[in-house]
Image 1 (cartoon, rainbow, N blue to C red):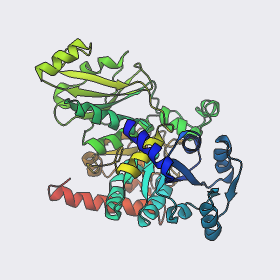
Image 2 (image 1 turned 45 degrees about the vertical axis):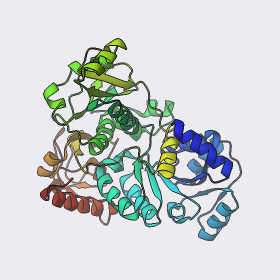
Image 3 (image 1 turned 135 degrees about the vertical axis):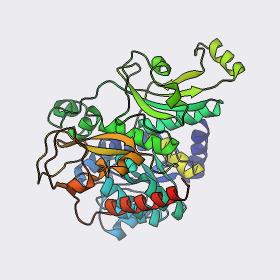
Image 4 (image 1 turned 45 degrees about the horizontal axis):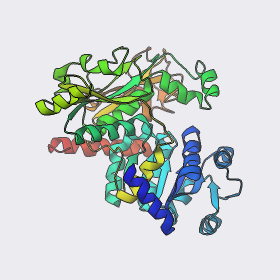
Length: 434
């Protein structure tokens, strides 16, 4: 953070800011736009792409920008960008192809649409920072392969729990501790929540009911922790994670099996604890001198210690990830270990043959995390691919849905990438490689 902000000041003085194209102007996208436009030196938001024009207009207006150009014409887009005007379009490919943009930020929360944007960005040698854990948990490993081949960076943005956790993980490791758990903190999980039950809360907090539903029914935490597992190699102790209840985050070292923690590490969460909007890392050390210092600084007797951050502020923190990516080629979080975890589709109710699944945060399914090896052995359907799938048989409530149970929508890029990922990492596993 300290290094990045000083470097951004240099870029501002030199007149060579980091140039950003934003895809998606929902809750997260608008917050990101506001932060870049009003607070970031050495960084410029060049253009916004959003399918609904009014949301893009809102993003600019909330940031104090009244003068912007709306166009879907490539030549007019290029001319407006060259003249230094803010641009709004509903064609994200114009951003990906622009030579006046260094990095694309995907804030869509959509696997299929995000995949299309990602490949076009990589094709045009653009870095990609995502506020889209739904896509990352599903096809992130293969997207990183494409990014690596293109010589660009694929990363989640800071601010959401995965990015904040990865920063903390690196900090703990840098102090000489061995991270053995990456943990989230939840105040509620109720798998029966739907967009109808969450409608009022969503309206009060300026968000979509489907997004709020994904928080409440547990899908979102599973999606986020799957991306952390893919970044750290940590496993899942049981399907859905343990999620023990407690009052304070400092209780976490006594709530999980030390044998499991020391056998490669876990991702998990605690329920009902304070600080309720934070994340934590459990770090291990047997070094007696380090433990003496930890005792002196009121961190406990060890050998397991709790390191936590009491907040995460997506999308207010996301611009710093963008800067790190472009300036230092440093990914905040990426699936360095390939597919370690998977988030599978579970019937939220009794679903009948012929019904269409409505995906993350909907009425029909919720997502549950498990180890990738187990989910592939059972041929389970990732929730990131579930939207639009048609059931070929009745599925009882709380039953895991398999690929054999559904007919997927035709012609989707995300399905092609999933199958490519499945084949690639299966072959790497056979060869003893990550």
